[in-house]
Image (cartoon, rainbow, N blue to C red; front, side, top):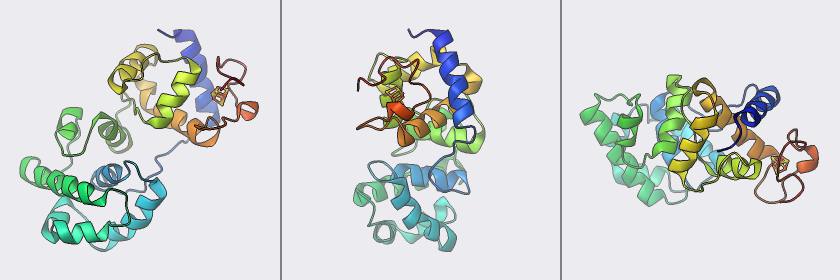
Length: 212
Ligand code: SF4
């Protein structure tokens, strides 16, 4: 297990560097965020925003709107998004469950969210943190996995185990913000290829500095 003192130092510096780190998907409701999060798998947030923002404004304001439009029309609306076919199926099924089991409201628990089609713990955590104010969630995405491994905060590469490892060293009230901020570091500095260690505010404490 990584040192709690070390984790504390990382948390402190991340909060100084990225105090307002935000979700890169545009959304105005839990419904919009859950749909966009499912669509963003293996696709860029920019593309999803480009396609979905006008659609949320013009015709898809609730799960019932997508259901009423039907799978083929919804599929046509999102066809510039990667894997639109499978994603359209998953989202129609998600909307059906929300309407039938949750009275049209996106559930606000991990259990409820992960019961929806196409929604795993990562997507559920995105919604719980961004829409429902839950702080005790870790968003294990590609950026978090890469940066935390380089920092020596995690040993596993299994998402469920990573979540457990990080929950042992990051206080519950910091877990969501840590996820958002580490994501920002991954996007801006600690990129998959050629991390910019020279410019990194963690380069004096990171065990991978100048080695990746
Ligand atoms: S010092 Fe380099 S490897 Fe370490 S977190 Fe910063 S950019 Fe990533």
